[in-house]
Length: 253
Image (cartoon, rainbow, N blue to C red; front, side, top):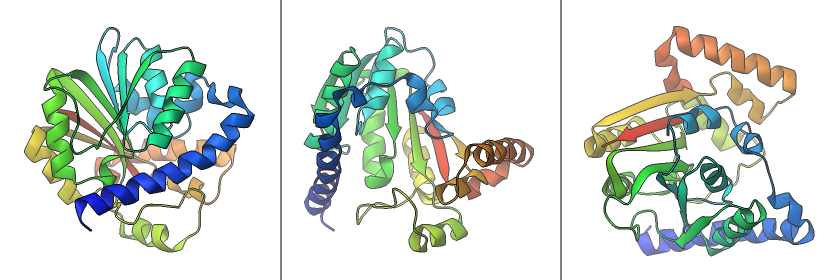
């Protein structure tokens, strides 16, 4: 699909999602308020992934593809000067409203992730959650590299496509939140090679090997047991990350 058509399709898809969410927030304004734990413990990879950004006090941080803006609020609460960008005007409106409701300052900017409207070396840290797999990875990587300052770090959390059984399950099994855009694709080994070509230093950590079951069968006890199992297995056999549901990728210039 041509780039302009792909971007238009992505924007329309996420604007529809944002409009649906906005109905709830108009009725219940306090639904925009949340604690850091509400966001960081929503998925098993979020808390360890954000820890990879390090101390954010006084640093300039970019929430890359901010969506609903929860990460931007958490970054601001950790002392960062936060800019949040997204292609979707609908989600940017929600991010602005969420920042106001949680009494933090976030600069929200409409932006295409492959053509960022920021100067070179503008940010010390970049956070991205489920964004790269919507983009042309080499183009996006070059933009992230361009806007990062020397010594900066980018952390992106992405669905992983290296497990053939998981690819089949994603295609055929029903589960909450399955809706996706036509052109998105989970990251593959080729994408990691592209990231290394741009950044050189790339660290990859897998999450939800057994715990991916919680997408179709969940419960507090089951989730806790599967998480413990993942921690033990992935520590004992590091190569198993390639079969996980999600990866956390740390990029340093």
